[in-house]
Length: 107
Image (tube, rainbow, N blue to C red; front, side, top):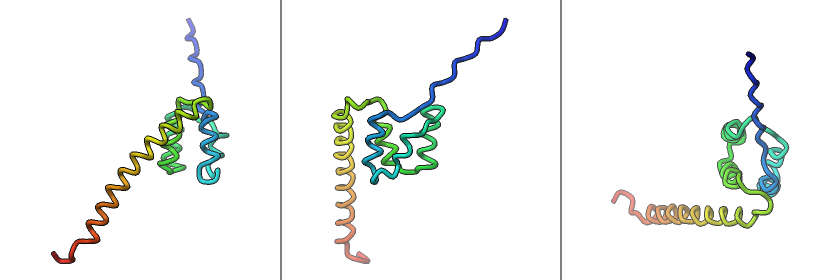
């Protein structure tokens, strides 16, 4: 009895919403990613880490992985929440910087 062949995994491609994001990120410098395909999401993720090495872009594309163009408002909400969190981090770093600037050397 012959074994049935396992169907080939569907290649991973960025969705239309992500392609729109790519067009607006860094003046479209990464728009070429919208024309590519990978064997799987894992292969895409490795590619983004190793070859593109832009953590913010990788984050945004992963955050919008499950959305399509009709869900742009949800994408904006997710990005807005992330901006709030980044502003909190920025504020903490600014406070640390101010503290370091006001320290008396050798005290």
